[in-house]
Length: 357
Image 1: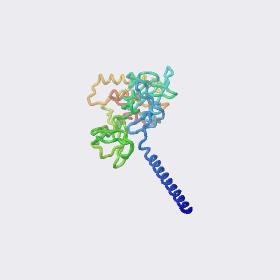
Image 2 (image 1 turned 90 degrees about the vertical axis):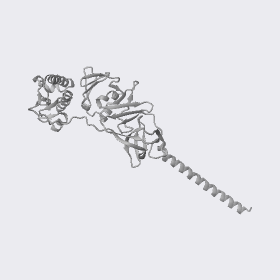
Image 3 (image 1 turned 135 degrees about the vertical axis):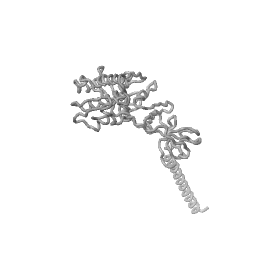
Image 4 (image 1 turned 180 degrees about the horizontal axis):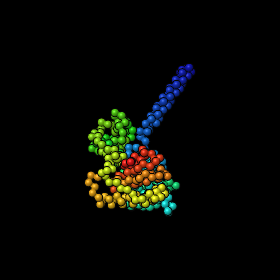
């Protein structure tokens, strides 16, 4: 072979080698890009505790959730206020401990720091957990307060999931019509979260589009299934507003009106400035209501406890007093009637009383 031919052969080999390397690099880049593209579909679960509140998955809490050795679930004060009770407040008691109060779901809650009991409408209930301070943050045993906030709280240790259901909110379920795979993402190539069996009931979180539905299983696994694989959609639980509505059917000439004793109005503004002062008035009036109910003919009659017009120094103290008294009144089957004081917002009064005169 001539020198020229050898040179051409070497050059051809170099070109082929370069082309081969270029093809190989391109092929590897395509593989890497596809791995990056589809990595999310096969993402592994992390080990942190996931929190679901109603149909909100992976809730980002203000503070870390805490679970004690008795499996009591704790949420921070900030998260309680954010998700369940924006009006939660506290006073410092005689032992220099925080005592919190709530009027959520028309129930009057008292819970004191480091005590294994709560009071609901003045009835003491022992609980497994307690209100406690941890790393400078106050934590509430939310799993022990389900009757207060009308919740269902479950912790699945093996799945590292806390599920909190608001029982007053709507809940839609459906039945799986054949054995299928619950997918991590809305694609058939995605990782399988769980195998679902025919006849299994799942909670419908959201219809994503005409093809895919996001669902939650009974053990709180969340993923996607094709809409065509579900049947028998039904409303397992309807939305229910537990708040009282303003009442206007009270007949002043027919129904029974209870008037507090004059002693109630003595130093009234001082009394209603603290929870214990308000509670004393409420208990006194509650006793009066019970006495009337026991000893009166109530055929086709309503009973109302009337708070007369009075000069108010601090409106927030007055509002809290009425909110708390209304709980006592309604729990006795009575209505709260108020003569509107000057400089008081009537729209706010309508939210916290049964009748304004």
